[in-house]
Each structure stands twice: as structure tokens, then as C-alpha cells.
Image (cartoon, rainbow, N blue to C red):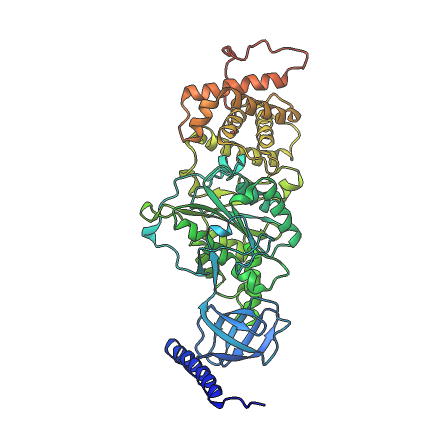
Amino acid sequence: MTRPDPSSDRKALGAVLEEAGAALEELRQTRSAGLEVRHVGRVEFVSEGVARVRGLHRPKSEELVRFRGERYGMVLNLDPEEAGIVLLDESEAISVGTEVRRTGRVLDVPVGEGLVGRVVDALGRPLDDAGDLSADERRPLERPAPGVMDRAPVQTPLQTGIKAVDALIPIGRGQRELIVGDRQTGKTAIALDAIANQRDTDVLCIYCAVGQRDTAVAKAIAGLREREAMDYTTILVAGADDPPGLQFACPFAAMSMAEFFMEQGRHVLLVLDDLTRHAQAYRELSLLLRRPPGREAYPGDVFFLHSRLLERATRLVDDLGGGSITALPVIETQAQNIAAYIPTNLISITDGQIYLSPVLFQKGHLPAIDVGKSVSRVGGKAQLPAYGAFAGDLRLSYSQFEELEMFSRFGTRLDEETRRTLEHGQRVREILKQPRFSPLTAAEQVVVLLAAGEGLLDDLPLSKVRPAEDAIRQAAQDRLQDLATRIAEGDKLEEDDRRRLLDAARKAVRRVSQPADKPDPTPDDGPDDEPEPAARNAP
């Protein structure tokens, strides 16, 4: 039996050692050993939505921190001995003594084209089944608002498709218009109608649902999908069952996403539904973090909370791209009390409000917009010029009708002029009704409201006002296409244009008012010799 050659074994071992030494040398040259500094603290107190942590070295305000199990929080309080953390995930797995680590970056969210058409939470995590997000970049939740010299005046209208809004409470791009009313009065419906009306425009939409029930959010998403509005809409959700930290962060995340598009020169419609629950979530967090309470137990900086949020919505000057964010914040009142703390704060911050009356809602006047309590402080500058032919007089006469109707209930005998004024106002109120997700073009609104303001519907019974409206709209589509295009492009109504609109409306009303077996003696294309009725305004 032959013995193995020791020299061959030594050669093989030497080759292996040389190969290992070369690998170690290459590793030494490419990587250098160093110390990694980690700032670690321990949870001293944990409650529903918040935690107090000791041991974190110099954390930053709104910095993202990581708990065990990949759970996150945001630094909100910076006290000398401890940091107050707002939890962004459920707190069941967090207990006293749990390790907390700094991440070194403030809370941010993904932004970009990849979020259009998606449903995400306040941290940008997808909630739908459409796969991972493809974000262009990440931006912090809080950023400085544009300066005064960077802002442009509101000059371009944002059409909602709702007659009562576009004609009487107009909204312009870059405006902040508050939607306020009691619970279940149709506040969200107006916001969703405005989103659906942007389908054929260059406006992107972001819908931020804060503290809403999951069923209500699912219904809103289904309505937008049915009308193909999700093709240009991003939805952020922080539901009623989510931690209050997510509800606090959600509106700021939505604003950061909108700012990305605005700075690219694009136009965004941002709906914040609703800021009452946002303020309540902030109050809950502040009380748990032992911040001193103020009026209605809200912290003293709740006004600053919403002002620094909504001040970021504006229209930029052309040198910065000319983009805009139009904000529609929604708040809920109790027992029609718009003088409560949060409603008065937001009314003073925004550029006007659309007030929804529960009384009108219960009577079936939808949308239940109270014209007398609603106002748009800057939207009139942006309104299409065609509305100027009747909008001012219509708003004034309708407000006077509402007051006259209230006082007429106390009397039994009315003079003829008062009776005509009431009849006219009832027809105007009927014409302002509009079903959900039934937007009208600017030309359709102009011809219908012009006919109502001029008294063409006063001789019709209320049951025939809706058929008359449909007939007027159809006549405008069939015979006034050129005029409709000019109205949409921003041209003023000349006297001849006004006469053409009224002639078409008068013939349509005549066909509706006549019995079905009685033909219209006036041909559609012939001149109308009947004198135009005078405008009927309340005294």
C-alpha cells in the first residue's frame, strides 16, 4: 500500500491559503471597519396612540422612529427628559421597556405620477390590490407655504358642475373654499361631484378621508370608479379605526402629494374630508401627551395646525410654473352652530364657505346649499363672464325670496306682487335642485338659470319644472353649440346671445307646458314674436 505524498498536500493547502488571503486583501481594500452609532431609547409610558420615550439622543421634531416589529412613530413632543411619540401603527406590540431607534429622517411620503389612481394610507402604503407604488421621490409632510411674491391671483374658474355652486358661489383655481354643515347633509357629495366633473379637464384630484367609516370610504371609491374618475384621482385614507397619529398625518401627506404636481405647473383639486375629525385626533394626541388644554379642550395651537396646512394651497406665478392647489376642506357642525371653535377657525382661514342646511336637506332640496349663509370671497373674479348676465340678480332675488317665504307663513292674505315673487322663488329653488353625479356644462347652467331668472318657468306647475329644464338643456345642445363653445372659452354674453338663449328656452318651455295632443304653433326655426317677460325680482 502506497503512502500519500506529503508535498502534494502542502501544495494544495498553500493554494487554498493564497486564495483566501487574496480574498481577504480585496475585502480589506473595498471595505473599512467602522463604528455605527445608533440612538436607542426605551419606552417609559404607552397609551392608545402615544408613547413617551427616554434615552433618545437629540431627536428632531417630526422625526420618524422605529419600534420593535417594524412599527413606526413620529416625534411630536420634545421635553428635556423624554420625547413624546405619536404612534403610526397599532400599539398592541409596544410595551414599557420596548426599544426605540431613531431613523434620522423626518416623516415623509412618496409623491409622483405612480400614485394617481391608487388608494394609500397616510404613509403612502398601498391599500388596494394594484401592487407596489412607483414614486418619483419622497417629500416631508410639513413644508413652508409659498411666499407672498410667489402667489398669483385667483383668475381661472374651477367648474364643479353644480348649478348652485358655479353660478352663486363660484370657486377659482387656487382658492380654499370650506364646505360646512351638520352630519348627513351632503357635504361629501358636493366634493365628490366636483371631482367627477374634472374628468375632461387638466385637473388632478386628491381625496383625503380622515376619520371616516370604512363603508363610507368604500362607497365613495366605488362611485368614483363607476364614473371613471379614479383615472385622475388619488385617495388617502385614515379611517376611524386607524390610530389617531395616522389621522393627524393624513391631510399633511395629501398636501405634500398635491404640492409635487403644483410645482410642475399642474392643477390639483384637494378635498380634505373632514378637518373636524382631524382636529379631534390632534386634541386626543395632545391630551395624552399632557399638553395644556384650551377652549373645548383643544390645544392652543389648533388654529396654527390648520392655517399652516391650508396656507400651502394657492396658485403660483407663471415664473414658477403657474400650477395651483384648490382646497375644499370639509367640517362638521353640531345643531347648525357655525360659531363653534373649529368652524370659526376654518371660516377665518379659508376664502369662503358653502353652508349646507339640514332643514333644506330634510325637505328634499338637494344639494341643500343655503345661499344666504354661503359666500365665495375671491371666486367671483374667476367666474366665467357668461354668469355675470344673471348671477348677481339671481342670488339677490333668491335670498329675498327665502326671507319673504319665512314671513309669509304668518299671514293668510298676500297681495298679487308678493304672490308672484313667491311663485318665482319656488321655481328658482326647484331649478337649483340637482341629483348626485349629474354635472352640467357651463352652457347648460347658463341657459337654464337665465330662463329661470327671467321668469320663463313661473307659469309652469312645480311638477313640470324638471321636464322643462331637461327640454331647455336639450335645446341648447341641439341648436346652440357655437354659443356653448364661446361660453366655455370665457366670452361674454352679448345682447344677441342673450336673445338666442331666451328664444330657445321659451320654445322648449312652451312644448312642455302644452298638452301632448296639441301641437306647438310656433316652428322651432322661426322667429318668436311673443314679447320677452320682464325679470321678476323680489322687492
